[in-house]
Length: 147
Image (cartoon, rainbow, N blue to C red; front, side, top):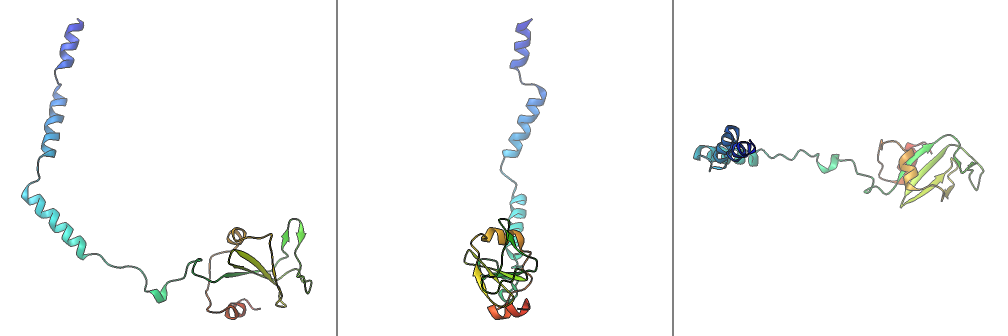
């Protein structure tokens, strides 16, 4: 009985024979018509390449290309449980937060600036929204934010 099962398993089944025939047909060299069609498709693809990027004057610079970023912060800024106040005039709200060269600076309405070591670029990126506008100079940006 086991001898018959082994003998049956040794001969390839009909499904296996069909599979081997189809795989041999697929591995055969392609017809000249198929080669002509492939060459024509490759030629079409080379002609169809179009540069779809915006011209350089219309592109928005990314964060690495900017000299710095600035965002308004109207509410009081609380860090480590303590409210941050300007070291010169004592104001504690209506800040401009500037991020430049991996440092975060606070600028009060009176124009005093102070380095805030408890904040970093990661904090700025988490709390700032998308870039709305870019400005050529620092003064233009201050005017844009009303300072």
